[in-house]
Amino acid sequence: MTHTAFTLGTPRDMAKRVFIKTYGCQMNVYDSARMTDLLASQGFLAAETARDADLVVLNTCHIREKAAEKVYSELGMISRLKEAKARRGGRMIVAVAGCVAQAESAEVVRRAPCVDLVIGPQSYHRLPELIARALKGGGAAILDTSFPVVPKFDYLSKAKAPRGVTAFLTVQEGCDKFCSFCVVPYTRGAEYSRPVVQILAEASNFVRGGVREITLLGQNVNAYHGEGPDGKEWRLGALIRGLAELPDLERIRYTTSHPRDVDHELIDAHREVPKLMPSLHLPVQSGSDRILALMNRRHTVGDYRLVVERLRTARPDLALSTDLIVGHPGERDDDFQATLDFVEEIRFAQAFSFKYSPRPGTPAASASGQVPEAAKSERLAALQLLTAKQQREFNEACVGRELLVLLERPGRHEGQLVGRSPYLQSVHVAAAGELIGQIVPALISGASASSLSGSVTKVVRL
Ligand code: SAM
Ligand code: SF4
Image 1 (cartoon, rainbow, N blue to C red):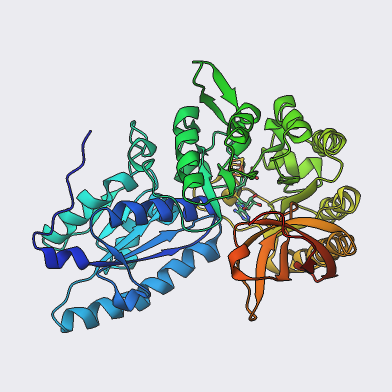
Image 2 (image 1 turned 90 degrees about the vertical axis):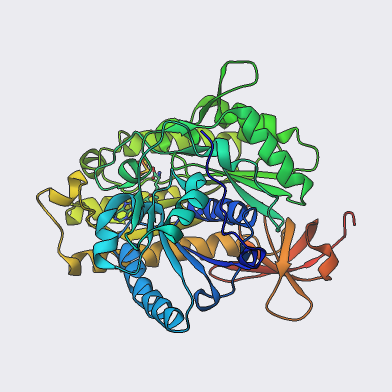
């Protein structure tokens, strides 16, 4: 398939400006970057704000109700900007992309008539063609939320190198697991793994552009099973080993993983591949087997414990983070207590916890035993007290240690740079700007709830 080039006719039109606002997960961040590349190749420059833009794209998240509602309130503001621009004789195209677009499709236009274009996550490669149609059209909104057979990556992978030191790279998309509470299988579709050759080419391109750390992304990244250059199926462990051979790529991470898909190849990679960083995000969701079964997670607390034991044997300093949901339908006080006990037992370096939010069309939304809002809030507060304490303790245990820090960007204060430790903590150090992109040893002297501070002990190379 070829897509129509985005032609607006005159050279003056080449200076159109686009503003993309990204909500939700890192996969949306990656998608927004690819949309930016694609639109730049069509002559679009980046606008600082929606006010300055001819094209506004909201790349949305539908995972919880709050995330979706934020989009509608933003659209209210954008509608006013669009009207003001029309009064000045200009034109603004408003596009809603991402998971709200996929899940709500025509409902988006019904609730926000200012929207010209609703585009699901599998159709981004068609953006130029759809924008051209919206510009030509008589004002009716265009909806494209199909799951095309030809994957978008075939069109988007000629990505430009990102500007930073670190980059996300989507290797897997979609999910076949159908957890009771989750919209992802409906918004992102079935599991798809990109071929290894395509991923290596994109990673090499990133590295040539100065990227030193790549985080491999997927809704279920460790369900990755892409076609290898040898024609065989490669799992994530093999892909990581392949990427580790790129000479100037210093660090590899991946997220988000499912406990059921942690196989021995991946565990061996944690033991044997120095470039694979010792941090892992492994959502458990609940510490109660009864709730895990209701969630259709297809693992038990015991399974999770075993996986963690094997990972920690392979890589004893592994910093483990997780996701937890409180108040899933059917959750009783004793289930919640089991979650607290399990968190206490495993000890997480970081945890993200959420109140269960019913998502239309998912099995849990219509299940009996919905938990009252007040109980959810109470449980969330108690859980977050515990996880914040564990995070602080994990950070404090780093004080006095020398950690290798990849310096990423200037800090808030003059003469300060911010980087990441191998364990994904932010580290603030006093250092000169030209060290951005370098990995330096830093002696950690301070720890707060969410970051570390220290001083560079030696510049390894310039
Ligand atoms: N694939 C990952 C996994 O298997 O756990 C999860 C990806 S999801 C985008 C990120 C997190 O959002 C989940 O781990 C879960 O904790 C949370 N989440 C998903 N649906 C939710 C809902 N309906 N209410 C509250 N939190 C939810
Ligand atoms: Fe959602 Fe993750 Fe479950 Fe898939 S495995 S349905 S993405 S929570």
